[in-house]
Image 1 (tube, rainbow, N blue to C red):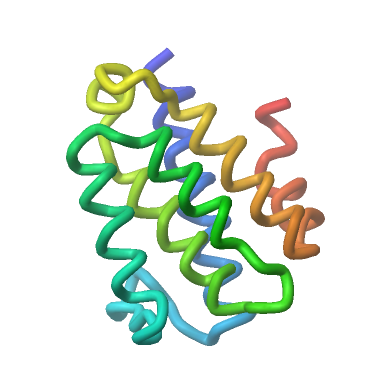
Image 2: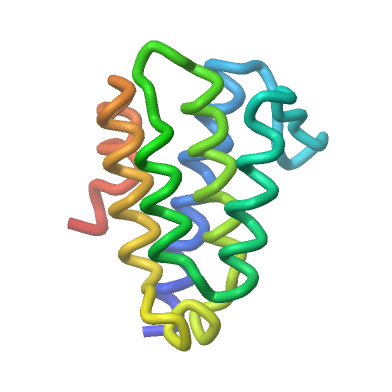
Length: 127
């Protein structure tokens, strides 16, 4: 069970990393990703909510702000799910969230912005 959770964690990170590199030309493993000023405050608010355990509400707020015509919102969403994915499984469970919900949320966003094929390649083994 632990190995499966660890695998999901790595796959989520690799999806985010790949999309950020391909679309925004940044590598989250080698540099801090700058979020534009318009989205920086929202990102800070959402990460604070995650840290406080208010994960479901943070995800709902993120979803309300998504706009398929605005790629910076896509970048924000990718960073949100990468940040959330870094939380350990115990923290997620304590706040009524699971690693699978992180994966599902990321899948929703990636599909919404038209990059679902990349998601499918990475998560094929998890189906």
